[in-house]
Image (cartoon, rainbow, N blue to C red; front, side):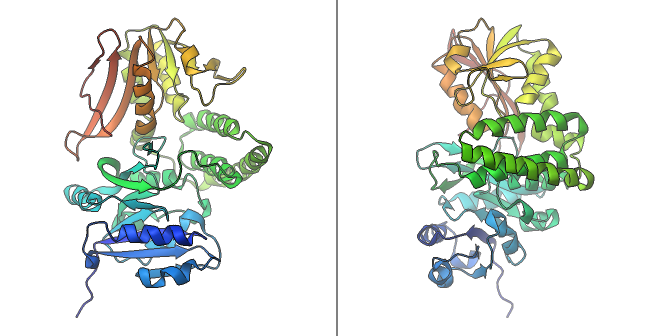
Length: 411
């Protein structure tokens, strides 16, 4: 008799986190599916704390590596997974009950859905999200196995950091839809204030430079490379992190030279889907304002800055408590603490963050701190879970009312 193929393959990679992964495996088994409907695949990245021995009997497939392949070690599980759908988790993340069944429904209703990102919840009640729309967080995302294998799975040379952008771009380039859904959820047990390691700093800048070189069209490459160098340099606040940043820049430039020669640029429609240049310019044209303040120095702020310039709106400053500092500026615009920026004589405030999670959090904060009109635009899955809707949030502080076309507040 032919062995029954599971519908879902859960794949996670781990390294020297025995107690954490044991707890995670117990949660996965409570996902709401029958045991025959899923399998668990764990890639052990050369753990020396007894992880493999502790979980051998708890998983369907254990892949023991002799080296640490990082989070991209999941790619080795993709090759051997038997499920028609694959779910990537971290060794400290797990789906909330009912979410996997709803994820299956999303894939059933859209034959071109290649990746379904989960809403990611942190222990402090906040949410984790990608900096660009239609990019998932790697600790909670489902894939159609066919699409994932066609795209090639995670690129192992990334090790960690920015591999989600690389994979989302490859899926979209091949015509697969990449979407995040507000009705499927994972818990991620890391602290929202977790300390950044020097290794994270190194891979952040190295891999973001690689992504830019590999995918961005000529018109965007120089601007985003300059922006991301500045962004990650500011995040490298201590001497140790500054050294890691410098090493990452060297590595990113070296590999980026190769990527530029061998990579595949995003087509104009795919570039627009992720970076939203035309969309933001259309939205900016509708603002009845001559002077604005940006709230947030988002990773995609160049698209907002470019749009304001294109329609002749003056940007007085950028309000961002995280990046504000003495003499800091972005393309000539001062970066100030948010409350200070809000005192400037602007006609309106624009949330300049393409991350729906982080942008919406800033928007909510502004509602209680600002009496100017506040604009927050985003693209989100929609009225039905399977339709695409362009949405705009506008707060009129004088009457505390939301206006705009197709307004939806999700998550």
